Amino acid sequence: NAGVTQTPKFQVLKTGQSMTLQCAQDMNHNSMYWYRQDPGMGLRLIYYSASEGTTDKGEVPNGYNVSRLNKREFSLRLESAAPSQTSVYFCASSLTGEGTEAFFGQGTRLTVV
Amino acid sequence: TQLLEQSPQFLSIQEGENLTVYCNSSSVFSSLQWYRQEPGEGPVLLVTVVTGGEVKKLKRLTFQFGDARKDSSLHITAAQPGDTGLYLCAGRRSTSYGKLTFGQGTILTVHP
Image (cartoon, rainbow over all chains, first blue to last red; front, side, top):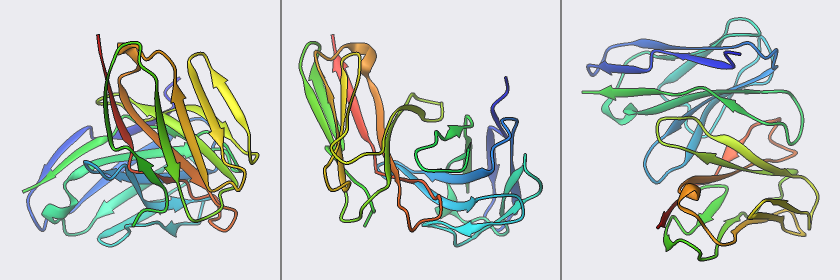
């Protein structure tokens, strides 16, 4: 079982470059999430998608855009990368409803120089 | 300020000691979860609590949801080196339309 698959695992960008982080899940989940993880900050929600065709901002959406391409895929785009976006990015998915378990990918370590 | 405040941020103890990690908020949560994360991996769910006052046990780990559903605690009895890791609380509010919010995390190190 693949679960949640993120690509790439590592990426180095120059300031101002753009890139898209890909995420796909094979568990037929409606809800998908993008988080960033910085030291001492836990996981902060960037964007959330409750279902195909819907997206909603999280705590730290500035500088990011997302696309819920279909039920399986949820991509995160950095249009003009900044050093402040250096972080580890995690995609997650879950069933809809209270108390449902979130399943995470293995993360993308992004460095912006 | 974070919606969920975890304390302590760091915990370094000897094998066999007991410890408690706290997760507090001024908001009411309809469910609270605890996750554990290993280096280089994504978080993995340990437990979910949904009822105020609920207590759940997972071997040496005891989880409690506050009566007012604004706080939770994780207690580990007789900690072992294998318990070392990052512990994260996370919750959903009824007004947040399914968004899952995390605390800052507690880095636990258990020395042999």
